Image 1 (cartoon, rainbow, N blue to C red):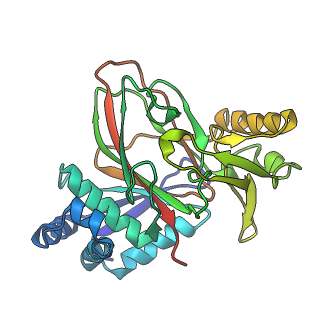
Image 2: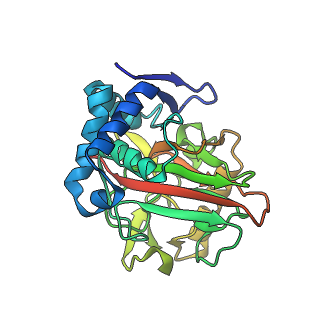
Image 3: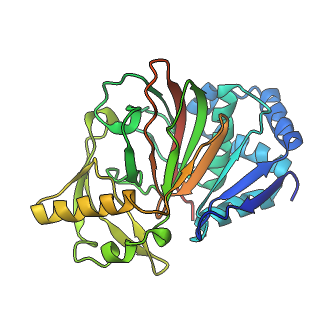
Length: 299
């Protein structure tokens, strides 16, 4: 397959792929994007153009590239990968275009209510007045899955590091349930299939409320849907179950900490990979900008 190679991490049994794209192929992709006068605004306003930039990437890397990416993210033993633009550009708009291409090879992005677009860009800085931990730099952002409070499927997500300065810490924290030592204890608990009440804080711009089980089956394998900040238990017993589940994950020895370079992204199957973020060290000049795209599989 032209322009791409991959290798398995040896850290865990269930491992992300680290994919490397050849600079020559990425340069040709970006030249095609520029030659077609593609812009972030054009992608926001005209959905068909999002599929077009995906086609430009496949033109350079081959249709097999798309088959492999979808295969990796569906595979229970991998379920995700990291890849980047290999320093061929530092233009943040081109980062958005690249993530758009990857997301439309995986499936279809959902509407992001926080931004009002098919993606969201947000900063994590020294000070923040939000009503959730997403932007609060000096707190542990606990392990969770995305889309718990939305009534549409959230099968996958992409997180792309757009910019960073004066940042120490803040690594992405990842845990696969098959590596979580107490997974079976919680997946087989009487409350595992109970449909808990989820609702979002005001900053998410989502008024709906949903009920979801914490564990469910896909291809006879247990998957997870959980976010401690947005779940509303109806009893002390339920609260103890959810609190114990979260604390069990947070202390697990198999959490991987991932430090992405600027310009790189991580794509995860949201049905089983849990993700969070380590706290940053205090620095008044700290700043990080991330892009998020999350969506559903087409099949």
